[in-house]
Length: 173
Image (cartoon, rainbow, N blue to C red; front, side, top):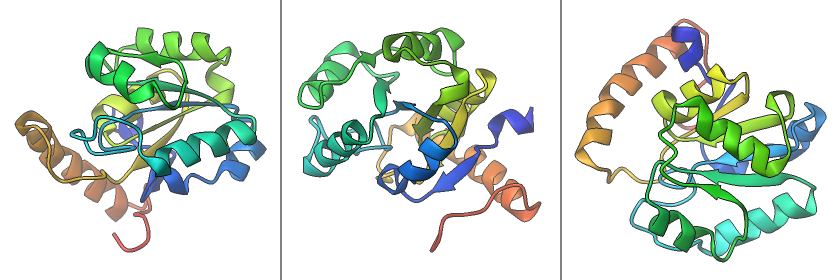
């Protein structure tokens, strides 16, 4: 079970994803969470940094799909300007949502990575599908109460993985 919670990479920010290394690994599709992965949950639209990053993804030939447990309204509003497909109310870590995202991009588990801020949704769901998983440090510490409670357990698991040499913490963390 613990192996399914271990990301392949743990980085400070989604924007620090080594896209050249992803291409070298054969990764061409990126499934990306919104809340606390790209922006804080209270940020309604994609900011300039997000827009520039998605333009870079496109220029490098990546396909991208937003995968969020949030509502249709939240996800549609956010993705209007970045113009990528999206799955809302994904119920991550369920496999169906990840399959839908890959179908929208025309990718498969061997050439798809998932980028997100939670091990129990993004990493666990991606690992169950055989995807390359990238955990990012949450953008903001302000979160819903339920997420804050889950973060306590998540922190213990991450700390344990780091202590056992199974995971390397991002620089400065």
